[in-house]
Length: 174
Ligand SMILES: CC(C)(COP(=O)(O)OP(=O)(O)OC[C@H]1O[C@@H](n2cnc3c(N)ncnc32)[C@H](O)[C@@H]1OP(=O)(O)O)[C@@H](O)C(=O)NCCC(=O)NCCS
Image (cartoon, rainbow, N blue to C red; front, side, top):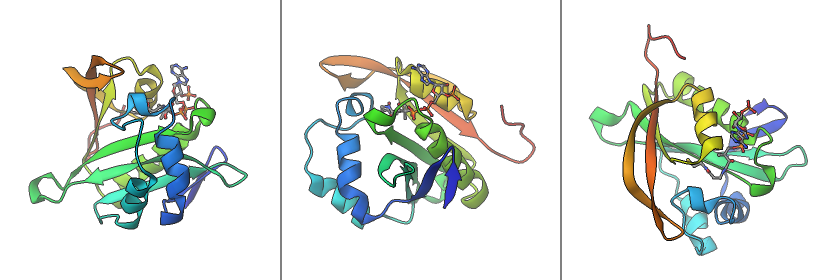
């Protein structure tokens, strides 16, 4: 467990399912992710009950103890891509812009670099999600490309940016 900017970061537990389900299906969250507005709680419960070894789910807790953010890494099983993982991140709509995402990113990057030995962490972000893009750039993610009309959002196909962060010995991080 680690503490950053007064948020406690810990592994997600099956008992967090209701809080995480509420966060990811909120109107200020799901449009900029690949989540759908209507999902049963049972999907999140199953996800947290059956966590594969390659998936690392972290939550951020506010000082009063409530879960206010969820992020992590989805790794790869296949031998030649085991050095890479995909990053995901969502913050409770009432807690956005208060450092929760930064606290989770610090923990995720530390996990990737210093405990999993990952070389590449990648992510996708909708082109106009300025807060997320600024956050990822702050943690050393670089732009790799633009996928045209990749994601349907509220009836409109939106471009999506690919970003990644490489970490290998001898390479200076931005
Ligand atoms: C994107 C998201 C995860 C960021 O988390 P957050 O807790 O709101 O982010 P933080 O408060 O830690 O701010 C991170 C950085 O974003 C930038 N930022 C903050 N508010 C911003 C704004 N209104 N516009 C642009 N950039 C902003 C700043 O660079 C900030 O870092 P700083 O405070 O050190 O300057 C969160 O807003 C969220 O869940 N959004 C909806 C779902 C989503 O978009 N998920 C990501 C999908 S790729």
